[in-house]
Image 1 (cartoon, rainbow, N blue to C red):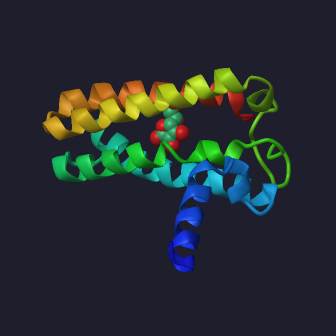
Image 2: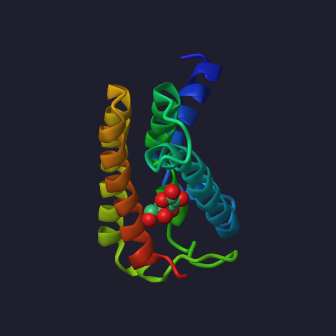
Length: 151
Ligand code: ASC
């Protein structure tokens, strides 16, 4: 293998297998990352909510685009909750996140699964289905906030 090709392969392999924490230079960055992702996710989710709650006219295409975005964003925050990222910047994250990792992960997985259903509902173009899926997804957001986020 040519050296450059070898380097490309090893960098690609590293980015795939490296522990999540390794992608952040310092805890502050991990906290900023997860807060940013959750903020952006809230913006896209909120646009769907505005339609579901009749605050914005229903636009099936916009609902679908936002839901697809939410599915992708829902995968991201968890890498920012690695070991040692409980402190380093102002955060509402409760210490239980790091002492109940499996339970926390269950909440994250549940939310991710709900976002997939949300995107499927958005694809139907049926506002009632969107409303139901939005409610279920919001519940999964809230469950995690109630357990793992300080007020
Ligand atoms: C949102 C948003 C959340 C959830 C949560 C559901 O639109 O930004 O964090 O819904 O409020 O209870």
